[in-house]
Image (cartoon, rainbow, N blue to C red):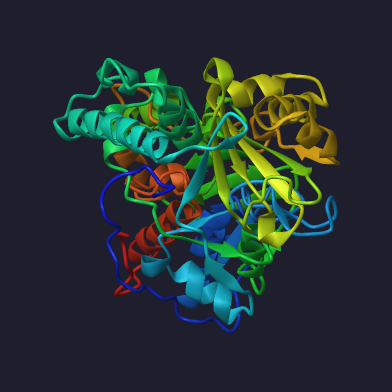
Length: 448
């Protein structure tokens, strides 16, 4: 059975970047393109601009590159991705080949999941019921979106999804979209490309993305506070001075604009303002923990799905890279509750869940744990983007150039691969292509 529940086939086609020997990066003064944010989108944009022989300034508010991809190796002694872990769309994305060229090992993520019911694996009938419920829910949402009915996804669900309805709707809503289905646009959902196939990086996806920033001139701990765009140039103000460029690529989450972290002057057109308001970041968090001895009998990197008592739903990534490290994935209200809770809220939640669903002995084996709080991180203020009902067409505004100088990039700025590193990377390449075309570079790719 498939572990992915999105729709439509991925458009294949290799797309590779030309290598660059010297990045024309600067940290002050005037450049061709100022790039704000050194996550996957900003790194992709900088590589593209540098490869075209144009100057750029890549600034990052944090102490590291990667954005919502970040690999920790210290906490558990093995690589653990605090943010995105799977590299979707490997057949049509340059990231996979670039990662291999950088010497990193990539391998196929298991295409399946094990379903638990109570303390044991579910039987064949239960698997069939679960798959049927998931497909019925997905088809209903997709049909509404394809017909242009931009409604809350929860409103179009079949009336009775059976005993596995809670798990199916959790996977499609909080886990897939970082929000409950009553806050998910049917149109946005229906446009998402399939994400069946994915790769994992042995060293971590955050390590891969950071590796691809090597050779770029990145100025860390340089937060943009204001962007002023006019008929001749763009000024990006930071605490360390002002950068002037002929164009600017804003490769940061829309939540930073809605929170007033970065002021844009003159004000954005209505389309872009509305997109920022209506495509916020939802809640998506991880709780990582050690579970020695493999009491669940899981294979390396196997996904375990649990429909427990009282409609409790759990998604567990077991034995990361073959180790004792496990990761509980949470989204929507459950993720928000842990984010807003006390420091050990994640550990308490997982331990109670393990004891309730797998038995007291398994719960007692749980060791060290850490939890993410992306929604509290001042540089992200959320997990992944999600278009609210009635706003499924608004992502397109993030792909348009404002006043020939201001361009958006990030996972929120890709119409079919939103919520993925693949979408972020391709949006960065698209944004760079738009900037290069404005600069008069012939043959610059614009759409991806």
